[in-house]
Each structure stands twice: as structure tokens, then as C-alpha cells.
Length: 349
Image 1 (tube, helix red, strand yellow):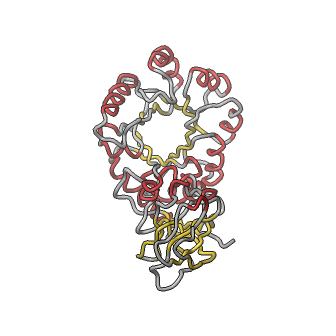
Image 2 (tube, one colour):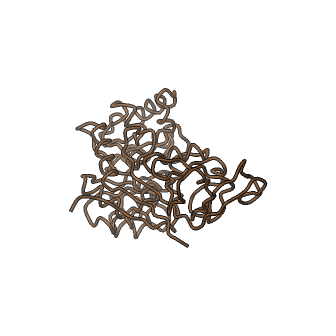
Image 3 (cartoon, helix red, strand yellow):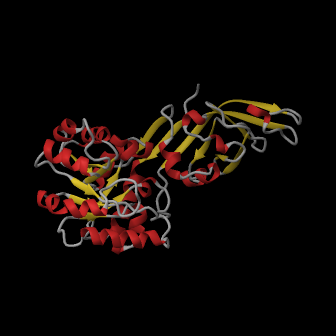
């Protein structure tokens, strides 16, 4: 099968990080979130580009992801593990100098007993009810933990993408109540929180989806293009059908291009009869069902059948495609399949 090409602009990712860093303010550090293989774009290459741009602190989801980033960056940059100190992580955390964000009394006990003196942070639950030490627990253990010298106290906003949502102010207030007077560096804002303004920034912000060109950072540069090869084309007449379940048939004679990508490559079935691909500046509708390895596209209006069509590019962002699929840009990015040939571009030496 012909190869689909996922082009990743490392310069754009670095530029987006710099832009978010400027929005965070001169007194605030800006970390880079490279979890889930840098949102599907390749953690090693992305982390190196961001380190060259100036990032010195990175966040990943699990210790195994931290190991990959440490291998890419070498010693020096701080790599924070959002899942904390899980059972079995001790040796990896120690050997690779990874910093866990402790999320529970169980993790706190494990870390202080297994790795006394090793760097750690604490994640606090300010109302999202997902990860973190709850307020009553924190009140009980804060004196002991603060004496142990955590690198950071952090929490995560549930509704930062909605600036007027009341949860933002409630969580900000809870974070102040749990952390004021501790003297420990604090972090509350990811991309959405950066855009909420300085009162959410504290000592460190965590740039994530905005680096990769996604909402809510509307000023972001586009970082990815996905070009899908056309395998075959055919003429289809009225009364004939295209694809599984016979969900589409033409109103007149049509030329249909069969394109090499499907739901196994991260294109959701909800895009069926509901998405657009592009031949340069010309839109071409996806028709019929998205199948495992293939989609079909109406190219009747083109002068000739192209060799490839873009589903991500200058005319269609990950969020545009997500809107068509009824999901979010995060899911589109992180689901991009391993069968794509990834091609990286950057101008630095």
C-alpha cells in the first residue's frame, strides 16, 4: 500500500512554545507537555526541538514516557511524571532522575520510604476529582511534605477552555487555600490556563495542546500536515453505491478516489460522509463509510485525479477535522496511526 505522509513542523511547535512562554510572563517558567508521545508527533524529536528553543522542564504521563524523553534529552532538564510514583517505578525514577508528581497518600508513603531525598512534586485535587491529594488529606500531610522540600505543588483546571466557567475561579480559590504560605513553587495553568491571564500563572505554566496548533490557542501556527495517497480511482454511476453499508450513491456520474487511510490510522468512523479532503485549495468531500484502511473521496470536479489529498493542512486544522468527527483535536492528534511516514522539518542547524 502507498504511504501516507505526516509532516511535522518542529519550528512551528517551537514557535508556539515561545509564544505561550511570552504570554506566561517574564517571571514565570514555561514547561512543555510531551505526554502521549508528544501528542502523537514523536516525543524524542519534539522534546529536542523544544529544549533547543529554551524549554527546561517537561511533563509526561508515565515513567516509561519519561525514560524516552530522558534518552532524547540527556541529563539536565527536569522531567515530571504526572501519574506520580507508581508501584514498580522506583528504579526508573531514581536511575533517570525523573520527578514524580505524587497524587495520593499511598504514593507519598512509597516515595518517601523508597527514595528519601529524591526530587518530587505534589499534585493537589482542587475540584476536578481525577488525580491529586484531596484538601483534607493535604491538610494532614502538608507540614511533613513541605519539610521534605517538594519541587512543586500543582493542580489542573477542569474548564480552562471556557474562560467564563465558574469552575475556574473556584479551583483558583481552592489552590490558593491549599498552597498560600507554603513557599513552594506552584503550577496551575496548562494552555487554557495561560490564556486565562496572570492570576492563574503562579511560578510555572505547562504548555500543551497549544504547542501543537490546537485550541484554545487560536494564534498557534499549524504544526502538522497529513497527506494521503490515492490508490485507485473509478467512475460511479447513479444507482451504484460506494463503501460499506451502501451509505452513499451519486446523483450523477462521479469519479471516486480510494485513499489509503482509515480508522486504523486514527480517522474516526464518524467522519463518514461528513469530512473534506483538499487538493491544494480545492475541497473534495469524503463519501461513504470510513473503513479500517481506506476512505473514498469524490473528485469529480477536479481536472484530473491527484496522486494524494490532504486531510490536515493549511485549509483544515486538527480542530476542524475534530469538529467534523464530533470530537476534540487532542483525540485526532494522539490517534494518528503508526503507519504514517513521519517527516520532520526544522531550520535550525
